[in-house]
Structure formats: structure tokens, C-alpha cells
Length: 388
Image (cartoon, rainbow, N blue to C red; front, side, top):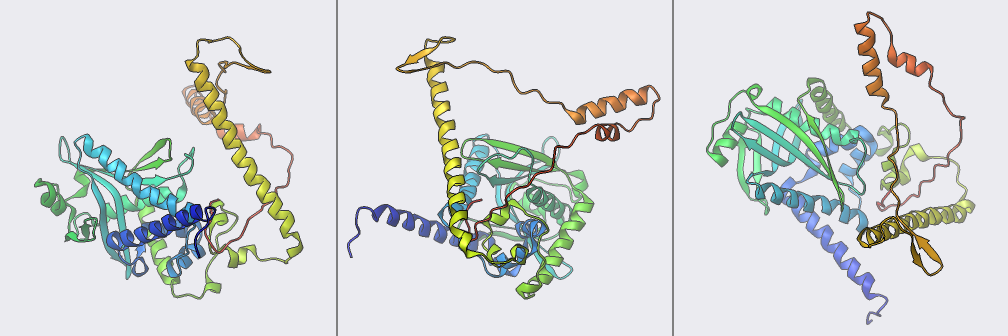
């Protein structure tokens, strides 16, 4: 049957979605191999949030909708763009350097987005993990931070072992099973120390949205984090053959629960069924979605008018537009109290005066808490991943 004009846009999006999924499967296989046969650092990061989801995703990966597929692929595009930007400055970043190790019988692999190496003035390694996000976070996410610590931990623990490999974009090995000093010698013909303690190593996280970016770091080697991360890999690997009903569930509610394709069967959300409420809740979901979209449209419209006013010759004056008038006025920034900075300064002053005072406890004593309230936790379930 011939497609109608109303069906053609949907057909276009379906074509693009299918292409993105096929491309993702091809590149994943070429660069990362069969992920069911090892535990990756991203698996360990997911495990730290919810063991059940991490294990099930390993056993039976879900099928993401277009928005989620696009978001995931955008992360790879960002890697390409950042690599090109670094190369334009004269640097030579390594893409998807692999570290493959076995710890207590568990196969573990790390694939590092970008690695920068320098021998002058001192031997230096910089690891850069790129994250694609809808909005920039104020603070780094704990699971992303765990990945950074995991990367630098594996570098320290296995730096001089034959565990480093690299493939080209088609998946053809460039080299396999080298120590990192051998990698440096192979690619750049330079000599690196055999002892990583003589090398300056840092890891960084780079969060990118469609319009902005933010760096988090540096992260340095931490023995406690190394042990915790490797032990989590052992725990996760041990759970892979377990039946679904025996998998541990994350305590409390996490924002990622709303986009988890295994939430439908999660015992954490078990309870009495009342299907008669579905239409009322769906209306609420639709309204909240409409409000979010409207807020974004308002922000865009206000930004557009601010930009127009900045280019106009009416600085400080009202602009008359029919029955409306407007102007842009400067506002003072929001004033906040830096409690941590104040506590540090007060503690320093007290020590100088020889006075023993627990400043954080003093702050806590004078904190006020508002009246308790109630919040409606509304979680749309779907067998397909949807954006939170």
C-alpha cells in the first residue's frame, strides 16, 4: 500500500532509528567486542547504581527508542569532535585504548575514550572520558566518577603488563597485548618509564550537551577505589548466572528508574493493582510533559527577545509593540552563603586563637528544617527505554 503524506515523516524517523541501531551494533562489535563475555567499567558503574538492572542489561539488552538511541550515539559523535579538536592543537589522542585483565577469575575490560601522552617535560598521561548529557550537572554523577577512578586504577595496577590493545574503526587490531611503555614506543618511538610512579597520571570527565560543556577532575589513583571497583566486578560476574528473582535491587528511588526497561518487573515497585486510575495518571503525565515543553518554549522566546534588545538602539528604554511594552533590565546575581568556605575560615581563626570549636556541629545546631510534606512519585512503566 502506498504511503500517505502523513505516514512519510514517521517512515523517515523509523528509517533513521533503524540505521542508528545498526550503526551502533556494528561499531560496538568492532570496538568493544561481545560485551556479554566480560565486565566493563560502564557495567560496574551501572552495578553501583542498581545491581539488578546492570545484570539484566548484560543478559538481555533492551531496545532503546529513537530519543535514547540518538542520545547514546551522540556520545560517540562528541568523541569524534573532541578528538578532532585535540588533533587540531597538535595533540595525538588515542581512541578507545583497551585494557583487558583478569581479576580473581573475572575478565574485565576498560575502553578509554581518549588518552593523551606526553614525554616532555615529564612523562604524562591524561585520560579523558566523554559523557553526552541533556543538561549539565552541577556536580559529577557518582557512577561517572567511578568510571574515572576505575580507568586510572587499571592503568596503575597493570601499566607494565601486556594488557593494552588498540583497534582501528573497522575493528582491525593495531596492536595487541602490549605494556603501556611498549605502546608509547610503538606509536611515537619514545621511551616511557617502566614504573608508573614516575609518570604523572590524571583522569578527567568531560560532560557535553548540545550547547555547552563542563570538565570534572582531575582524578588520581586511589587504592581504596581500586579495591572497591574490582570487588564490584567480581560481585557482578558472580550474579550473571543467577535467576532474575534472586538479583539484588537498588535501595530507594533513583532518577534512572524512570528510563529502565527492566522496571516493569522490578520487585521494588510491586504493589496492589488499580487499573481504573490509569487514565487519571496518564493525564497527569501528559500535563507534566506539556508543562516541560512549554517552559522550554518560554525560555527560548525570552532568550530571543533579549538577543533582539541587545542589538537594538533602545538600551534602557521601553520598546512599544502594539498593546505590549518590554525592556531588558540588569539583575544582581543571587546571593548565597558558602557554608563550607565559612566553616573553613572560622575553624582556621579558632585554631589561631587556641579555641577548640567544632564549627560544622555549630552550623548543624542552628539549622532549621521546614515542615514535612508529601510527594507524588509517578513512574510511567514501559518495556522500551524512554527518557526520564
